Amino acid sequence: MPVLRRRSVPVLAPGQEPITILHLSDLHLTDRTQARVDWVRDLAQVSPDVVVNTGDNLSFASGLLPLGQALEPFLGLPGAFVMGDHDYRSTVFKLPTRYLRADPRSADSPEDAEDVEALPWRAVRDLQASGGWADLGNARGTLEVRGRSIELVGVDDPHADRDAYPEPASSPDDVVEPVRNREGRPLRL
Image 1 (cartoon, rainbow, N blue to C red):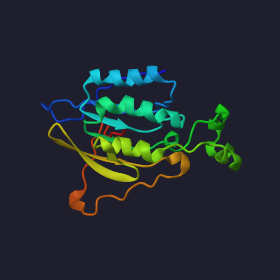
Image 2: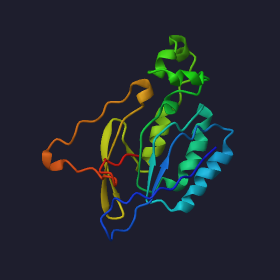
Image 3: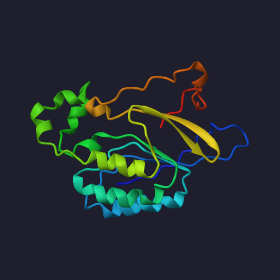
Image 4: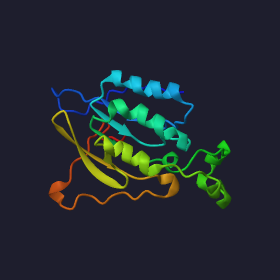
């Protein structure tokens, strides 16, 4: 069941206009999830300034066209994305108790990987990139949002050990202090 949560994160300097970030994740679309597609499209009413998609967009390859329909209202906005496990591999049933293990992947058998449908991940990536969104798969990027530069960093799918945290900026002059929350910790989405 889709959920819209609103959070106010007071990190901008006093007097600056707020930035509305729409964070999409875990859509798990198929050719039978039109109600979810409509729900995502309706999020355009939030009037986001920037969109961040953290993956798991598909459940099966049949979700590619619905994904395009869902993201269409947002593709002209500044945005960034990373891929999730369900952008590369289709959904398969797994016992929920596997998540009680220190490493849930230790419950997977090698045969499981052979039975998993590969998803059209290049098309998922290209769809988002076609809207000008930054691909943050093991990369850093900068978005210009309402006259402000926002530095971002992302990793590729950790479930499949595709993640490799990108090296910091090459010059100490290029290092940007992270935005911090009220407790002083770096803000993470």
